Structures are given as C-alpha cells and as structure tokens.
Image (cartoon, rainbow, N blue to C red):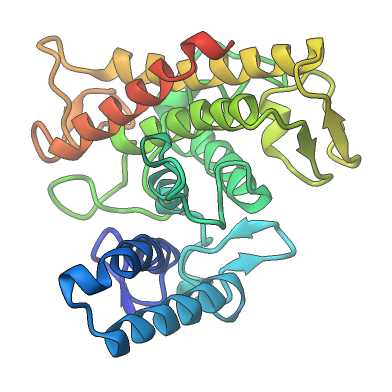
Length: 295
C-alpha cells in the first residue's frame, strides 16, 4: 500500500495519494455495478475492488495514522514526522479534488471541506507560511485577528527546499494559494445548498479567520439562513477572494503563471506556464462562479 507523494519526493504512506486512490475506486464501483452485465464485468474483479475500497477507507481513517488527534490536523506522511511538520497543501488538494460540485452524488464521504482536521490543517499552513515567506510580511500590518492572514501566499509544505530549479529555499506556489481560495468557496456552497447550520467544534482554529471575537474554547452553532449565517458566508467569500487577489498581484504582466513566485521578490520562477497553475486557477474561478447567486 506504500506509494509516492504528490510531489514525487517520498516513498511511504501518503494522505493525498491514498485518498485519491480511494476516490477513484469508490467512483468506479457504482458504474461497474450498473453496467456489469452489459460490459461483462467479472464478479470476482468487482468484489476485489469493493474489498480494496473498504481496506483503503479503514486505512485512511484509522490505521494509516494520518489524523493527529492532539493538533487536530492531517499529517500528510506520518513516516517523515520529525523531518517535517506533517503540514502539506496536498492535504487541502485531496479535499477539494474529492468534493467537486461538478460531480454531485460522487463526492467522497470523508474529509469534506468542512472537516475539522482539514480546516485546522489549512489554518496551520496559513499561519506558518505567513512568517515563512518574506513577501507575506510586506503586506500592511494588520492587527485584526480575523483578517491578518488574509491573502497569505502559500507553498507546498513548510520544509520545502525546491526553488523551481535546484535545492535552496521553497517558495509560494500559484496552485497552493488557489487551493485555499477554492476550499473557502466550496465551503460556502456546502452550507448553502445543503441548508445546514454551521457547526463549529471547539479547537477549530480556521474559524478565527472568518468570525469576529471567535472563542475556540467553545462549540458554536450558527443557524442556517440567519443574519449571522449569511454574514459568515460573506466573510468566507472575502477570505477566498483574498487569495485570488494575491495570485493576481503575482501574475506576470502578460498573464502567465509559472510554477512558483519568489518569496522575496514575488516574481515568477520555476516551470514556465505550468498547466497546473492555470488549472488550479480555473477550478477556483469555477467554484466562485457557482456560489455568486447563493449569497
């Protein structure tokens, strides 16, 4: 069950890769079940897929050791703890990729965009990288606890040393910064379309980015469609837009986006016109467009 991480750097047990494997098999099973006679699907093969799906589900939920119950985050690869903090934007990508509003009814049942551990992981990435990358410190100092991390340029993981050419210092990535924005927009869509209250468990640090006078020591319920509910969604929209603003400020004059942007100067570097950068941006815009009429 070992695999490589998203960045093709470490061989081990990885949250992103395991979740994406689970998602792929989980989506394939109902299609094969519906068409097994027409396609001549072997029953033994289908049963093996179901067994593999259940094994992966158990592994990613419990046996893989991905959930840090003390910090309430997802550890991207528990085997390299000590060398790395466990924080990785790949965790956020796993959540947004497996919960796509374009595939209604096919989303993975776990680690949705409102998951406590997913949200705390994003918060800790934002907090650590706000100090890690000098361009984030160049922003106007903001003492407002709610908005001081708005628009933080994000990279892959705090210990990254790949600079796009060689090994020196890691930088923010366009796709990583877009991921924070996309998750914020998908969170809005989830609460609005499912007509559900916003239930915030104590210890959830993410909501300090959204709510005024937030107390993480208490459980909070914000009633669906109340004034507080609608204002909270507006704040989520502002949070998501702040990351898009950061992307806009670092796009080249001709509109091109490379892999990374330099953490000191903000200029593009690494792979030129990285397709993934554009894909991440377009995914985020699609997510934003899907909620404009819901606020």
